[in-house]
Amino acid sequence: MDAFYASVELLRYPQLKGLPVVIGGGRRSVDEAIRHVPEGGTLADIPVDAFPRLKDYVGRGVITTATYPARQFGVGSAMGLMKAAKLCPQAIILPVDFEEIRKYSRTFKQVIREVAPLMEDRGVDEVYIDFTDVPGGQRDGGRSLARLIQKAILDATGLTCSIGVAPNKLIAKMASEFNKPNGISVVYEDDLQARIWPLPCRKVNGIGPKADEKLKRFGIETVGQLAARERDWLIQNFGKSTGAWMHEVAWGRDNRPVVTESEPVSMSRETTFDRDLHAVRDRAELGAIFTHLCEKLAEDLQRKGYVGKTIGIKLRYDDFKIATRDQTIERHTADGKTIRQVGGLCLKRVPLERPLRLLGVRVGALAKAGSPEAMAAAAGGPALRASAEATSATASLF
Image 1 (cartoon, rainbow, N blue to C red):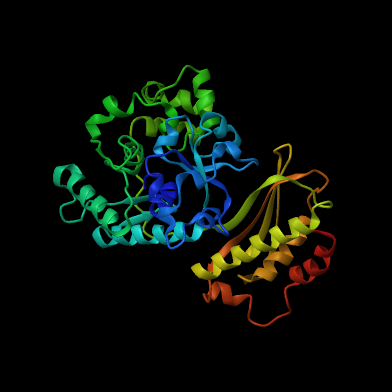
Image 2 (cartoon, helix red, strand yellow; image 1 turned 45 degrees about the horizontal axis):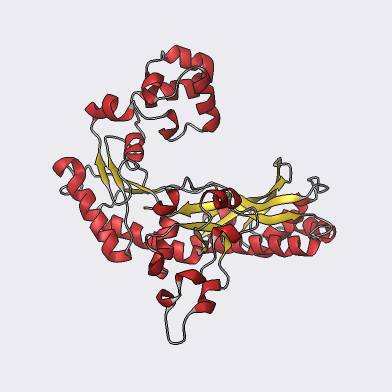
C-alpha cells in the first residue's frame, strides 16, 4: 500500500492531500485536531493551520511513514522526528491510529483474497499474491489483473497501492518500488540485467545497512557488481549461508512459495518514551506504561486466538544498549495480569540503574487457544509457579 499510515489519515483529513504530512510520535487517544472542528462541521472542515507542525515537536519519536510530498524533503520512515523537523519543519505531524490502520488492513486484504485467493500476509500494509492460476492472471504479463486489484482496493477503501509483478517474490518486492504511488511494474526474467542489476544492493530485501557497508568496502555497490562476484568468494567473506544466499539473489533466483497460512512465533508490544525514564524516579509512570503494554498484548493474543508460554521483556537504555529477559511458565496464557506478573519477574533480572528509552513485552511459544498443545499443561496441577513468584517480586519494581 502507498504510504499506508499517512494515506489512512488523509481519508480522515482530505484537506491535507498534497501537503507534507508525517505519521509518528505516539498513539492517538484524543485527536487534538478535533478540538478545532467548526461548530456543525466535520473533520474535513478543520483549517489546515490548526494542525500541529513538525517544527514544534519535542521528543524522541520516529516516523512511521510520510506522504510523498514530505519525502521530497528527504523525510522517510524510521527517521527521528527531531531530525525530520530540520528537513521539513512545515510538515504536519499526526499520531498513529492503530485501530483505523487495522480496519483498513483487514479490508484491503479481504478484497485481494476475493480476486486472488493465494495471498501471503506480510504485515499490515504488504502482501504477496500468486497470479499463476487466477483467471486472467497471465494476461499482459499480469498487468491486467494487477490493474483490477488496484481498482477493487480503491473502490473499497479509497486507498492506492503499487504492485510489482515478477517471476518470484524477491523481484516482485523490488518491482513494487519502481513506480510509486499507484503504479504497476512488470519485470520479466530477461529484465534482470537491465532493471535489477543497476539497483543499489540495499534494494534487495534482506541486505541491511551492516551488510551493505561491508559490501561497499569491497567495492560492491550495485546488484550487478554483487552478481559479478564468485559464489565461493561471497561464502568466504560473508559465511556459508549468507554468501550463498547473496549469490542467488544477485542472479534473481528465489524459490520461496507464496505461503497462505503461517503461525506467528511470538507477539509483542513496545513503546519508545518521549524522555528517558528511570525505574526509581519514574516508577509510577513506568508501571502504568508496562501494565498498559501487557493489557494490549493480551488483547492482541485474545483477538487472534493465541496463548503463549514464554513471556519476555525488552529494555533499551539511554546509551542505546538493549537488554532482554524471558521466563517460560507451566501453562499457556493470554491473560494480561499473568503477562504483567511474569514480565515483572523478568524485570527483576535486568539492571535498572540507567535511564530507559524503550520498554517492550513479548509472548512466545504460541499455540492456538483451545488446541491440544495449549490444553495439555492446563489439565489440573498447581497454579503457575512463575506467576506466584512474580506476584511478590514485582512489588519492588515498576
